[in-house]
Image (tube, rainbow, N blue to C red; front, top):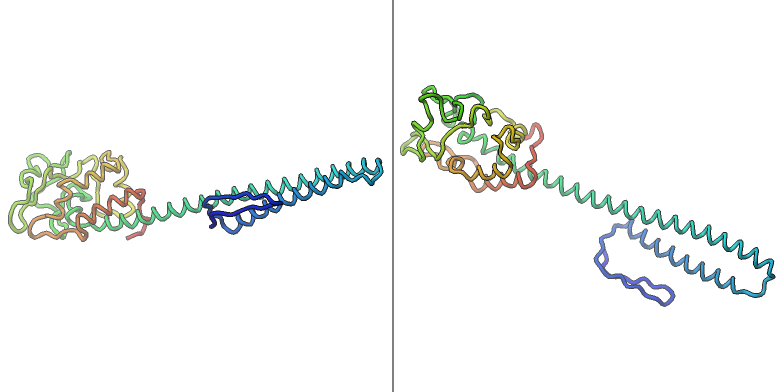
Length: 273
């Protein structure tokens, strides 16, 4: 890392100012480039001096100039090739460095995203979430995830079947008392054509399902963030007497969910817990 340096040759000074990030290989090539330029200047000066010599015979001069031209052509070609190789190497190194930085950043974001979802997964597997995202058409009850009594079923719109509608018992707020029917605005399960099952899903499978519009009800990633702000989701942290709450606070859950999406919504690898 250097900020300012001078290149001096035969009384002339070129000052280069700026912040450069160079590795050892590129620094070596820059110095090599400078040495080549110095050599070229010295060589041409020497040849000019020879050309001005008057002590040689005219025939010798012709042969000398012919040989000099050939040598200049040969040496110049070698220098041009060397400079071209150095320049290409410099560009390739720059590309490698940029690719390395990009890959490192992407890998870091991927890791952060996966870890964030594993925290989110703990909440999604809690009874407060999973009971309304069952594998079958019967909602679950209690911390032990038993089937809902009274023969209640999902229904096409997720709000119950026939006369057994969710809203018959589940109002817009919890009914007071121990283990009494809970309630929140728009109480329902996912619809029958988009069940969005949590029960039995691995972290990988659930993450893939959540971010897929074909499986999540047509929601974009931003829509998912907005969904997590609804009263129905927030109810999980105010479930009424006799019910446990998720392992994370609502703020922690929301922040981890948003972090998962902001860092790429990367699904944890298969077998992650």
